[in-house]
Length: 163
Image 1 (cartoon, rainbow, N blue to C red):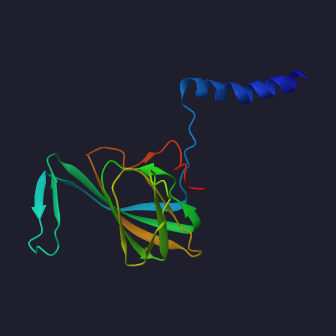
Image 2 (cartoon, helix red, strand yellow; image 1 turned 180 degrees about the vertical axis):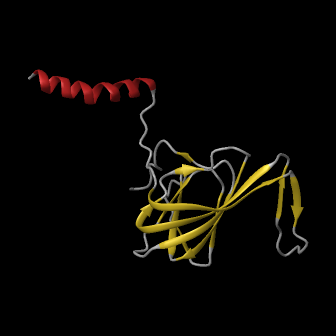
Image 3 (cartoon, rainbow, N blue to C red; image 1 turned 45 degrees about the vertical axis):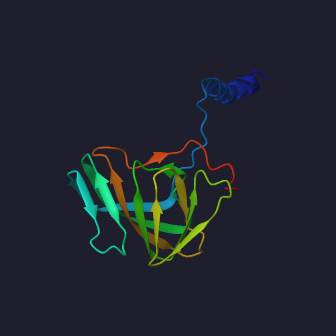
């Protein structure tokens, strides 16, 4: 009987302490996704505007920016886990098909991106999933303040998504 009580206390006390402190998290770590840095560069502040008005592209940074180019390889049924970035991320699917979900989307709308297509992550939070049944790959261009973490795991998944 004493062993049973001790086991329950060992399991329940840390959880109760976390609840009391508001620190229990249900973060989903990445699973089945490998990442490789292909390039990294530090950029001075800039302001650019495309010459061709049909493109309608502008970008500026008042402070230095570190830009990373990473390749992500996704196994079948893999996930990046719910996470955010300090700045925008430009994702190009180079193999297969990936599905992205936004952290704050009450409809949990899937954004399916096929090979040769892109997805822009604003940095507010998302998850990337390989729901295609075949391996997939992307190349991501990640903007961040120099020395900042490129990724922050989010405490809980989008409550509207069933995964």
